[in-house]
Length: 314
Length: 280
Image (cartoon, rainbow over all chains, first blue to last red; front, side, top):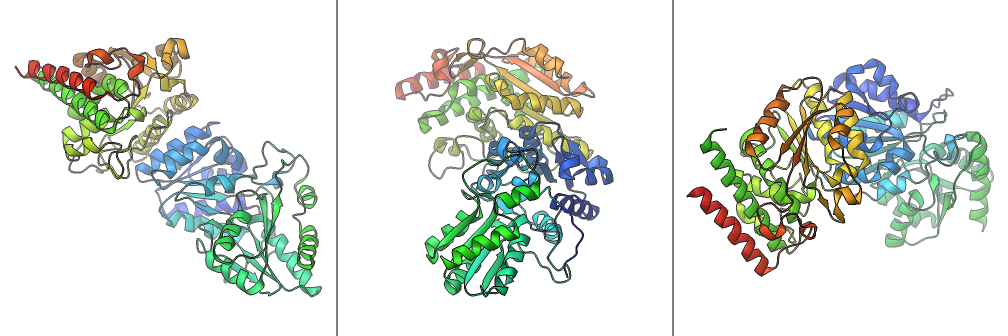
């Protein structure tokens, strides 16, 4: 079952790329002077001829990726989430999204768990930005095994994909023996009938711990791991809304435009129930150690347990 | 090129201009000025320079053209129609609802368009990616990218320029259609680019300056570009915005405006007269 060894999803990403690249010479990797941080340096060491450092020029990197894809390559372009999706938003929209080119964009150091670098680097808007681009698949894997499978799925999907990577080393909770990843299909981690918690990315494991604590207190919460933000799994949301009557979303992302709003738009249209969004409120983060920030923003297991309990009892 | 070739090239360029103006007139919007300034070079690329086959527009070994100044697609569409990539009737529905020919190039729906473009500064990066793919595949094809002079105010152009030279993309040939005008006025008054040749030189390019309406100079420049090894080439082509339609020439106002019926009649008559003179 769950391993105790901690690994950041950025590293899982770099390892998965190397594995895939063995069989697929069309995979090439681009970075914008952050290979050591995004972990594309793992690929760079294994395949130096297939790695292109674009320097600190994210807009150009996305355009180069588009050109490579137009010639049949499958480029993975990585940078920090802030610069990949923020700085280069319009290049992604117009040079990748509009022509629906087969470019995979990886945004590392997403969310507040970047830690000490502070607000300028804590991208809490990447999922929102990427969701708005027609045809873009948006993935936010929660642990090592999920990232490994997500990278494969992204490669097999013919079209643009955004993958969110985390900086922080985290425990894996998925069972590699039985784990299956399918784009657009949420995974029920815990059954429950009092409320449904839908979480994504790094905070899924925190939500899992919180839900287990609450079970002992007699609160029977369902937990869904929503690794795909787009296309969102409507069926699992509607089922949860019908069966549990209320939903709490948990994300290390702005409550504007991310998982919470994606879920809310499904419930609003198909099965209106109360949806409470837990995430980063409409504010910037700040410097500090990652775990301290997660606790401060109420996104660690203890904080989530408290907030979920209060919402269920409200 | 010999006289016969030159005559054919001039006739084709004239027809490309006629298509461009016809498209913009029927669309009641679009960008005639820069289309006309680019028409000669685009014609040369499609009728002489590039290794392409309109019957096989996706051939892996073809040369590629990226119109980074995507708003000037009426000229590109004219060349593609004349070359037989699609029926010339499509020109009349440019920019119409449901039309194949979009206001800016759309590679998904228009045969012969190698890259979607229109947001300035982005096409040259995509061209770099195509050239890089060619190097990676050890393929022989060449990649051409046409920039506007105003477009060179975009920072991304220079990011791409650094990338092209760092990666020794000698299979990339950029062309700057230097017509001297942009929407808000003269380029040197809005946000001057000069000395643009020295800028590209310092970014590691082989720089060739030509008159962008002289086919002998155009041919010599592209021929020279093919001999350059280890670095990309840029052809800085001095051109006349609105070239070929008297009242549009060197007029800022014709950057992004369609002629009305009377103006179209004059433009058509002028271009038809030019064609008749070439055919005589």
